Length: 399
Image: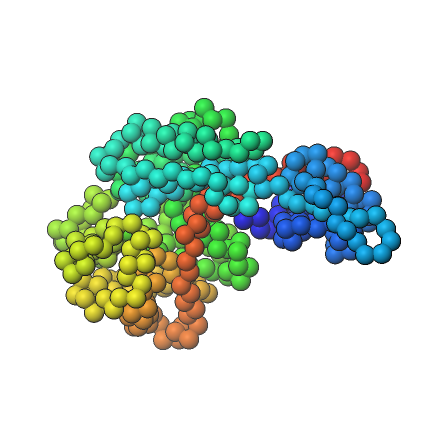
């Protein structure tokens, strides 16, 4: 979780010693344990610089000392140092299928506690807000002693105004109208970060893999819903209207009588999303689950690409992905979701996609199937932690 901490001061005013402090903390997190002498040798800093910075980190509680490390030969034993991941905690809120999920995470991204609640499609603002607050109360009860809640990160589907912290609408809950999430959660006295689903997931994969930060990266999700996110040179792009990459609500069957969860008819999701396909899939596999992670495991090794319902879905998805490619011409396409983890469906999708792309680009297309069940959760609290850590990684004296 603690990736790129040594860049935490980039883009703002800082002193050289602030960068050194961040690098020392990053080194401790990367190694898990070290000593002052090992840090001095590895980073090439002056011993007095390391000693004074470590003193500050211990005073601020983000580094702890262990038992002396016995040495061979002469000299005083070195004291082991450890990053204190419980110094700060964060709450992550995400949506999977029709369920709001909350995780209490420590500074290293480890799950301290979790709470999952299914939300009725008929729920309105008050019901959804009360559900979220119920999850938060449950998780706060598990906050470790001595840990400070740094903030709340939420990754929600639909129309999201991240700047104002407003969840404007969601096709999964039609009665949800313009929830001011920051105001609703102000009683907890911590920063609240709200993101459109897929954006923090893409950001998570970007800071995990520096190659993804070069040029254009397209994330395409095919699961309970269908959507995309796009980044250019490591920056996730968005819209002031709160919707971007909503490929699932492209109209692909004009005149269709199939009503989408968004209220329109003939959207891509009506032909290919898990929520739309599940009734047909269950005619053959009655126990097929609705939950995305469970559905992923259920179909991973099943040869279902030849089923009529899947073949039809593949035609629409490959056409839509081909058109999306021709909008951005990305350097790579990251495929996320249960359907693309099935090798039979993936092979068919690639074949169909190639048909809808220009011949001169086909050898340049780089597909990658990615999977990390915690990408949305960790991505939504990434900036929570960076904001909270930044003042702790500024030196208080001119060491």
